[in-house]
Image (tube, rainbow, N blue to C red; front, side, top):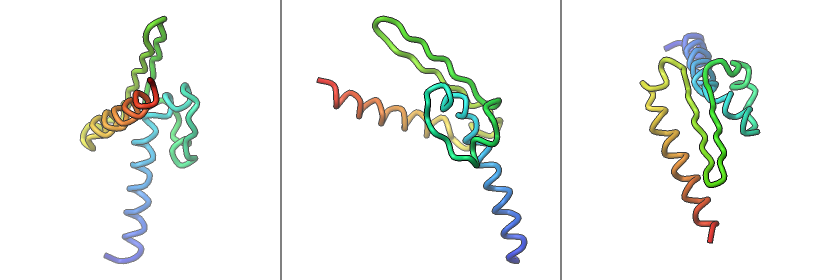
Length: 94
């Protein structure tokens, strides 16, 4: 593969990854999490977030509506990341 073709493929792949991550921009904005510019530039139209707070619970439901997100098993990665954070939080609670 020539260098020019490789660079074109790299640029296309990076754009797809940025758009894929942009499915979480709405959640990042709502929860006050900083996002890199190469992700933020895609906007927050590709995802939703719902936060519900009651006296006994706190729920956050995040949706990534990028069509190819499921094909990339992004839901499994997100579940794993949430589980890890939940366990870290519970270890700090006594």
